[in-house]
Length: 316
Image (cartoon, rainbow, N blue to C red; front, side):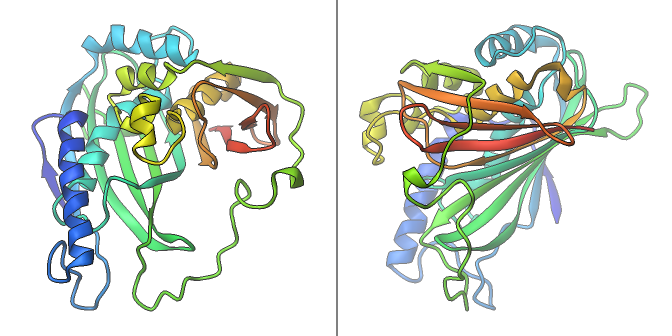
């Protein structure tokens, strides 16, 4: 895999415009063979063998932005950058990979399935960072294909040594309707958070309840830069088939991470699987409980037996 160094972290607004154009080009290519990304000679969809890199990312000027994030996500007001905040910093570089001309899947319409994040050393305001991102793991899913977008944040050594890995996040996405050659729609079991009649699952006793106003998506978009129309208003969300705006999945996961509290430790692994989206405004019941090696968390619709997300936080 080759490494391309970019001068700075890109802006999400421009990336979404490119993503809309590339999604249209891929759709046209599927409808009219001969247009759009060409498959490899063996007929497989192929991911770009390129990793993006941005060095010299300073955090000195992020204090106000970090405080805004901490207030919104209910994180303590310290100089430590929580794992959810580092995801916000790295997300634009991963998105830049997905809007490349040789990325074979459309950005628009991708479904966020899961995240697996490891914070292996603390990152604090004043650290100088190096960010990397690439795509890997294209594989079949019962509704299409799934792919992993990997991002890493490394802390540069003030003495001039090699940057040290501090944070690694793997975001898994589903592209519906795509199939790999010789893929006979494999019989994959539905994830624990999907399928079955609503009455077949009995939620646990909640440990908390979130009353999320209709402005939640706009508030997180202002912090993260992720202004996908499905999160901003009922009108813009309806254009994509949602009855109302939906909360960002990473908002719900990061808020659950914050509510685990100090017991997560200074370093930890944080995982989440997403199920049904949270409609805004809405109320979410949450259960956060100790487990053998850390904490589990679960969120569901308070008025229906409908799961939204679940995951674990494990101290390292």
